Structure formats: C-alpha cells, structure tokens
Image 1 (spheres, rainbow, N blue to C red):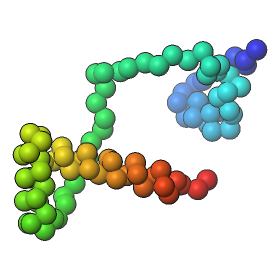
Image 2 (cartoon, rainbow, N blue to C red):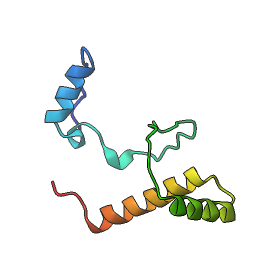
Image 3 (cartoon, rainbow, N blue to C red):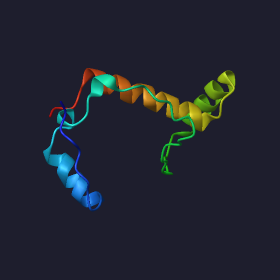
Length: 93
C-alpha cells in the first residue's frame, strides 16, 4: 500500500517535500496511463544566432526542398543532434 500524499500549504512546501521523498513511495506508477496534451505549447525563447551566409543559404535550400520554414528545419536539426549527443554522451549523476 502506498503512503498518502500530504496536503501542502504552498508550492515551496511541496517542492521541499518532493526534493526529499521518492514519489514511488506515494504513487503506483505501474497504474499510470499515457496522456496526450495536444494543446500544450512548449516555452520558447528567441535568440540571436550568427551564421555564415553560405550556411544560411544552404539551410534555406534544404528547407525549401522539404517545404518547411528554414527556422523549423534548423530546430529539427538541432533537436536530432542533441538527442544523438545525449544518447552517446549521457550526463553523469
């Protein structure tokens, strides 16, 4: 039987609690169900990025071939590379 999750006075109290307790003692993750939150949008932050003109032109050509905006293609490329790097070089705890 799992422990009952206490009531918290505020988010700081809840944050402190979960920082020192294992959720597996309170939640049966085996009974969890996959949910899709299709209306959620990730937080984004604008950055300024300097690229050689030739690289930007090549990126635009590739994006045009795929019929996507070049900024979107750049995000796809970055996401794929980050995933690859993390797979081969995971963070150490």
